[in-house]
Image (cartoon, rainbow, N blue to C red):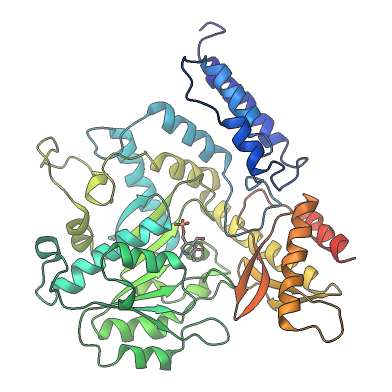
Length: 466
Ligand SMILES: Cc1ncc(COP(=O)(O)O)c(C=O)c1O
């Protein structure tokens, strides 16, 4: 190997380690603005080519300051996981190996690693060992995959073959959802051709859980094809619907029950948190993410389906060049994509790096840190806890001290404080509107977060309020 061989890859390794080593020192916010990024990256189409090492150096220089510090331990906005070292490295190798993970024939190791990682995940999450699965781009496409199987099954039970006849003239499908659901559920429903009007939101109680009486009312007499989507940790406060109560009723009414467990399904891996998810295993399908709490780099969603026949029927495809005889699992039978990245390598690496107890420890640690952040910030003068963290999410709001301040003033103050904290570069949070009020949402899902990071974030908020 000469000095110039693979120089682009060597530069990438240098920049990557430099970036990661500097996470603690650099501000968490982006320090560039839109115009600067466009000026640095833009220009005309290059007429001639550039040496790969130079391309990488230029890319790093042009994007410097344009990245949020999500990879680090002081980022608590949205629900954005980090990347475990082996998972990031496996992701690089995935690009180097450049397998088309559609078929076993196109990438034997990519197919088998996914078979193994899928089985491990079912074990860790306490899902049926016989369930089928798909590694998708994210929870959005995991919903789509699971709900495509649901569509096939619930219409099939009425004698309607959706693959052959589509949806024109089919019996209408109702989709019961929580009024706290993530919008990706609505979008999956829309992608599947049901339309927004098929969505029936069901009221939740003060703890964000679907109210069983409202649920029974929405189920009605249970006639007609029905899909129910429940939350295993809603996006704001991490509420788990009462699965043990709702799922048997829904299934008795002939419904397919799907779970949005984008991050909350991972609570199954913790002995202390698993009870929150009791009964979730009774569902028909489950969607979660590798790129959130499992700390696999983007993009990685995970879909699991109890009825593998319905799952396969809704996704499989045949072509003159796909072998009918199956030697091993072909991903194309379970996924919505054709050509695709070998997502299994990074998931496999993450699961090996953590092991069962490492994953449990990551879940438990994140929950402790979220609780500490919410409690300590909420205790400050001018702050108020809206939702104590029971998992990894909590809500705090900031109060306008002016006499006679209204809810609108407190909302404005909350957004101002979030922005001011983010400007310190010490921590990064995002806002949300919960039950009509603005709040700072605290979410801890990164393996890098330490006690020291939490103290720095608390100190940053104190400095802003002080
Ligand atoms: C509860 C919930 N469901 C679904 C999603 C969508 O996940 P993804 O962005 O991986 O598609 C999110 C994203 O934050 C989420 O929090």
